[in-house]
Image 1 (cartoon, rainbow, N blue to C red):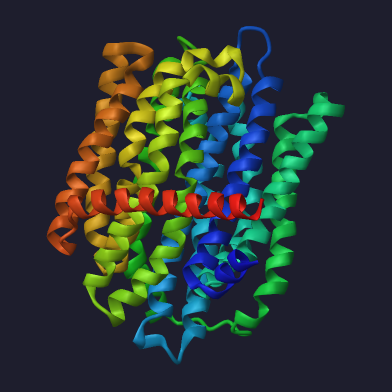
Image 2 (cartoon, rainbow, N blue to C red):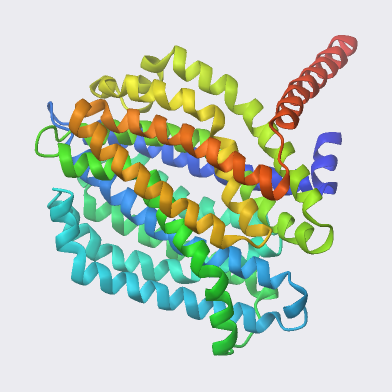
Amino acid sequence: MRIIKAVKSSFWLNSMFFSIMMRFSLVFFGAISYILLARIFAKGDSLAQMNYWSLFTVTTATIELTKAGLLRNAFIKYLHSVEFIDNKTVVQSSSLFINAGCTLLVVLAILFGGAWFSHFLKAPPLEHLLYWSCFLLIALVPFNHYEIILQANFQFQLNFYAYLIRQGSFFLYMLLGAIFFPEYITFENLLLVQILGVVGADIYMYIKCRPYLSGKLIYNAAVIKKLLGFGKFVFGTALFANVSRSVDQLVTANIMNNINVNAVSYYNVVSRVSNMMDSPTTAAADILFPKNAQASELEGNAKVKYYFERMVATLTALIIPIGLFIFIFPKFVVMIIAGPKYYAAIPILQLMAISSFIRPFIFNFGHTVDAIGKPRTNFLVNVALMILNTGITYYCLINFGFMGAAYATFAVNAITFLWFYLILRKVLNIELKNIVVYTKLTYVNLFQMARKILFKQTVSV
């Protein structure tokens, strides 16, 4: 009871709890669905179907995350700014106009460029899926709008329930389909269930979001331009960062699909595990950005520095034991996630596990830099990193074959960490020694907490 009261009474604990629960539900439902799908699509020695579905999910996820990058940070930044404190309706309306306009451009790009993109990735079935995904993208317009409004108002629990509807429906279909009618687990049906899940979440979010909706739509070109002025860098950053995150799979498809059609499937297994490990970091970033935006406006960068160092340290402390386990027992992890037909992914997974120790630092860089009003810096760095990542990945794949993309990702992560640290050292005086101290402190606190719990149990017995 004390723990429940503490969670409810603390902004950080309450927000972190529901944000982590939302990310956990995404990871849980996504992991179980992937585990089932990897086995259903593993027919004979070919993993071609899993290859094509992996490329489709990477593409749609990149589109959604990139659009969210355009919308979320600019909306939250200006909603909490002094300039719009008495005129939040126009910020809300402008964000929706940008949301709808961006979706329209993406739909047009798919209709006119879907065939070329599928040919580039040497994945013919992808073209048909991309055309049908236009309906999914349209359904995501209200979903993304409501999600950002709820996040800006710190209603993380409502976003959690919405994602539960969206992901839970897909998970339920996968579970029942795998048990009773695996023949109906097709590309088209999977996409249809995704669309219906988003529509169901749209309805729920509209009902819950009404107290925060302005009730009217105001077109203001100046405010739209202002949001885009801030958001254009965040949009570019999200685009290049998300593409860079998927470069290993996209470039592998372009080079290896004619040689080894299973290659992308192996990299996708590692990507799934990496996404699971990143879920606490993602949850923290959801909370930290609006808090940093407020701190930057009201308390200055010293508070942002503290938030960054403390959060990265806490996340690193959580990631280290998980990364070590994956590195020592990679075969067990691959067996659980995808099955024995994916054992070729083991060396890739081990490289990912080593680089996971610095990912909390890398992941929180962008949100922090955006929050202190330097989106241009974040944009330029990510453009350079995507170009670097693509070039190194092509070079390594051509010269080292199947493992080339893994070597490239490992090298780029190391370069990224060093570069991000130098930037944050300059603009926020971030200190690695503080992160190390806070990491040790996290373990000390966890140990003391566990000892108190065990001691109370012993006394009660």
